[in-house]
Image 1 (cartoon, helix red, strand yellow):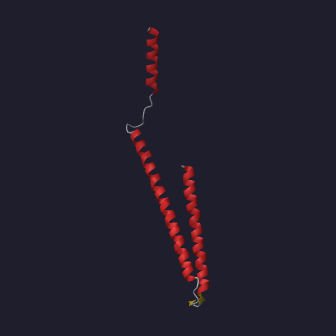
Image 2: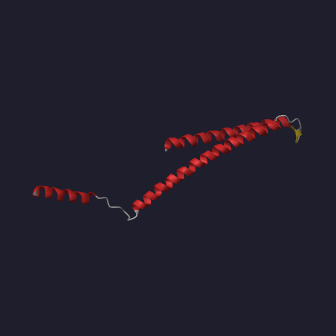
Image 3: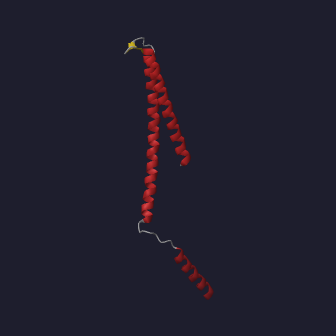
Length: 115
């Protein structure tokens, strides 16, 4: 019996020394708050990505509409044939859409693989 009491006392002393002292009293609460804020920020970013995709497709649709409307112009604008201006406008719209698509895909899929 005496030996088991000594072992119990020894284990109690070990347990007392194994307790981790926190640097601040509210350390755990602050860490939990930070974790909660990060989780909320992740949800916010997810919603922003959905909006970015929505506006990308809206821009794509409007770009196609503008291209179709201006495709049949046969006038001179400031002495330049309208079809040349339309051609450069179409190239500009296509480049902007491609750059935006590249960034959006990169952001959407890299974010998911990092999380």
